[in-house]
Length: 66
Image (tube, rainbow, N blue to C red; front, side):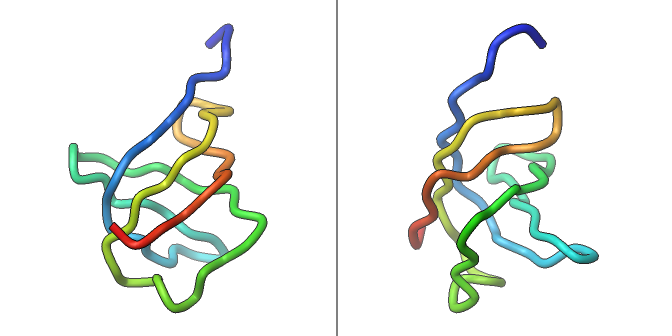
């Protein structure tokens, strides 16, 4: 992957191990690098905006209820 890719996706915000993932509405998972964790949104549908920094990792810039 040569360039960072902008990500804007919806799905279910879940805890996994010591981190968080987005179970994507489109299928598959994104592992999330989140600087702020909206604990009230865990287990709920959200929209994330961020930058894809690795094939399965998104550096999250924003999370909102979806």
